[in-house]
Length: 406
Image (cartoon, rainbow, N blue to C red; front, top):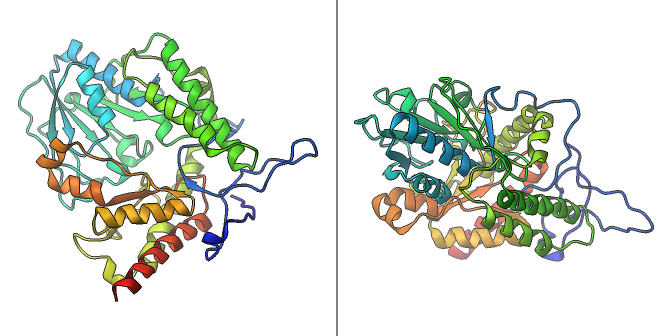
């Protein structure tokens, strides 16, 4: 991917700048534009599709599209209640709360088991006891090891797997679960979309139409994506312009009524070059994890303290493709200061996810992880040079902290 030169304020002049790729817009005398804006992270901007049909096999042939991932889960659970008598859903305690919202909307009882990305041991899988139970497992942040599979006492038809954070992993392709699902807009530049398929060939629920409420939310997200592309191209668009649409869209995304995705989403899918994008993401993740371990002083990477995920012994690039590179800080205060520093340099690391008080009480290890983690984006929008810049910002942050502590 090609990059173009840009300039930053003097505040960050100590770092060489390599902007994110493919954002230039031709200038003209009637519509002048500024140089492209460099930033790393945040929600996707609009990315043109490729006419070659590079994404024809982006999903299994029997996959059913939904308006979003939480609608897909809700529909599967509702189908499971009707067809199999499901009443209880077992969830990992470290989970996005919109997932729990979908489970409750399906009138299912939530039971939580211990599982979080930094754990060195297997999740604390619940035992299978009754046919009315269903086990929901997640490839959290795309970091799940192949040996951490659900125990064999769980019947396949009583399992649902969420592969949102790496939809094309070997775990997803070789799954034997009753149902698999993904939230497409988390890993692809789409305004909406979720999908469900059944490796066992079980009947998949199907939404009837595009619901007006969902269409409004999706259109708001699409507007945000288009505005963000203009912003990054140097046109006269402010961050507040597209952030307002992003926030409105996210607040309007609902669990029900279940909807089809926007027609533009379904039409784009066959033309998204997912293989190349995933390879570029794995390349970026490999580069960033390696550089972070080189630039951070060795003393800062200690067991149960600061860490980088995936760990060297567990990384398997490019077969493994993490959702992001995770920096674990020593404590919440250090994490928050590092995040502020990164944002000052136009690097926007999400926190995935703040846990409710009850979850924190039941699993202190997961709450500790959530309080110390930052997710550094490494997807196909960026180059190894962009990863280098992020690593240098992290390096400088810890260098200054070490100087102050001496």
